[in-house]
Amino acid sequence: MQEDDLVAATDLAGRALELIGGDGEMSGLRLLVGSNRFAWLADQDRFAEAEAGARQVLAQAERSWTPRMGSIRLRVAEMAYVRGHWDDAQSELEQSAEFPTARLITAVRLSYQALIAAHRDDWESAAAHFEALAAPEYLAEALQVYAGLGAVWDTRRALARIRPYGVRPGVRGARRRPKNGWEALTDTEARIAELVSRGLSNPDIAGQLQLSRRTVGNHVSHILMKLQVSSRREVADLARSAASAADARAGVPRRAAG
Image (tube, rainbow, N blue to C red; front, side, top):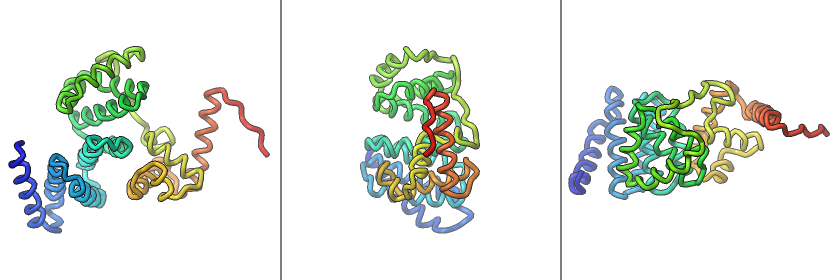
């Protein structure tokens, strides 16, 4: 889309949102127009406006629990990624994965997660994401995503670095995460749960992980739901149990009580 067309489309989307207003029967249309508008604002580097628009769309989507939530969070993640805010992008990508999405959306999500891991030299994580992308139904879409980002060199470099991990196209698809229990938590959720177990408040966690308080609150809600508990104390108990189990698997001796 040409720059002038992009500006005009953004203005039209804003006017459309004003006309739609709070009409409950048009909530789906409001989400679609709103998510397009904040993405177009980001394309114009109008990030403050884009972030404000994204917050409004996410708030509405959370109230309505729309199936569009996965694609909306993916757009927020894309906006964070292009600004180099990788922690925020990773958090949104993990939350996007909680919702059913089309094959293309899943491929885009895995593509960004692989790139973030590669940028951090976390080649084991990159390998896991590339392994999922190597499935025939995802690979073509993923390579198109990287080409659109101008990340062809990054892709070649990453693929070369993960070959020692045995990743081969078409070998195996993504591993399914369980719906409940500690293993159901995403990496970010597990990290937040560990901080909860240490007694940190949501604002403290937000400051330590450089996430918004709202994002941390959403993660804590998801943690409680997945662990099927109702209190932070119960989260702490399960975190300690998970840590003990991990130590046992690793052969770490238990410390004597007292």
